[in-house]
Every structure is written in C-alpha cells, then in structure tokens.
Image 1 (cartoon, rainbow, N blue to C red):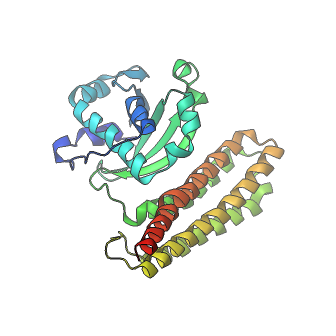
Image 2 (cartoon, rainbow, N blue to C red):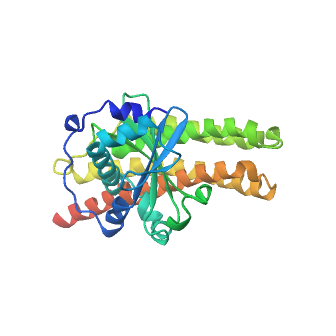
Image 3 (tube, rainbow, N blue to C red):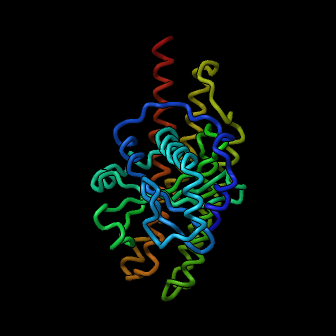
Length: 298
C-alpha cells in the first residue's frame, strides 16, 4: 500500500482545476460525510471527513501528510464525488443504505502503479455510531476508477469496468484455494465464469475499437447514435450473462454453507450488478434520450 507516499509527491496546483458542477442532495451529503482510507506500508488509515485519524494510532508519516496536504485531500474528496455523480451510479442504486447511515461513505483508495495518478476506489457505508466498534460490518457499495489528471473518460469508462470484471475472477481463484472446503468440487463453475469473463473482455474490446472514444452529439447523426447505443447494449448483454453465472454459483455456495468464501462471490456479483445499472442508466438510458430528442427535432 503506497497511497500516502504517492499522494505526498503531488502538488495540488499541478492538478487540473475542478469544474464546478451542481450536485444533488445525495452527493452533497456524501461529500460532507466522506471518510478516506489510505495505505502506507502494511497499514491502512481511516481518516474522518475533517482528516482526523480514526484508526489505527497515527504515526509521523500520516500526521505529516495530513498537515501538509489538506488542500490536496479537499481536492481529492471533491474529485471522487464528482466522478461518482458523472460517471457512476453507485450512490444512486445504493442510496437506501447510504441514507440509512446518514450518508456516511468510506472511500478506500488503491494506487494503480501510476505515480499517484490512477486509483481504484472501493466504497462502503456504515452506521456512524458503530463505525469503530463494528468496523467489519460495513456494507460494500462498489468500486470505481479515477485518473486525477484526466476527468473525462474514454468510452464512458467501460474499459475499466470490463478489465475489473476479468481481474476479479482472478481474485476469486486466489480466495478459493484459501477459503473453500473442497475447491475442486466447484471446478465447473470456475471454468464457466472464466469463459464468460473472457468472452466479455474480448467481445467488448472488439466493439469498443469500432466506437468513438468520446461522443460529440452535435456532430452525430441519428442513425449513428442508434448504432452506438445498440453496440453498448450488446456489451451490457455479455455482462448480464456473466452475472447470471455468478449468481447461480453464489446460490450453490450458500446452499453448501461455504460461508468463508461466498462473500467474495457476493461482492463480485455486486460489481457486475452495478455495471449493468451503469449501462442501463448512464449509457443506454442517456443515449436513448438523445435519440428521442433527435427524432423530435426532425
């Protein structure tokens, strides 16, 4: 874990200025109540919205970082929430859990070997009263990927979603050896998930290569936009097929009482369900509205 070290090297003045956007009440409240989890060495530190270290006991490295980089942390939190508002539906589809917990959300950052530029973020929510006493009971919301130097995402960020879906299968394999009572008993399911995730990746990447990375709606013709919408919908269908296989596996694991392992499959299914919702709302839903408006104008 090197998030603190890499962020320490950044000068907030070198980061692109944040464009002001109007956040709805949900995202505004999450911004006010956003906790950060940042790693240094083997230790993961939990920072409150005002940047006090909740756990574990802080050392000199984390104290110096907070003292010297408060402006960077302010920028980081707003950047994260703006990305959630524009390129994600994580808060929208998990609003019940977030609002039940007074919009307390934890953002756990993992730097992606990019010199502090790109991060994977896992999001959780938790009861404010029990955050420290029952920390392990936090609710997983989902994951997102940010680039601190490039807000606008190619292909709506679909490539990162697809790569993550394949990578999480590899994580499942590692956990299976450690957590399953009889890993070989589920060999057929692992093979089916592997094949489905590989097909999702190969077919999706082939589709994306045929699409413009960014859409200029002022220049696109209606028939082009209809075709682009259909292509993204096809990618979503591959996601749905993979989700069905994972859900079937999850049900079997629960029946077999594989409680030590099933939670990892549940988290994987959550990521896939979030991706499907993202397509339905942010991509296909938005593109369909654009198509209808185009037809209305003509």
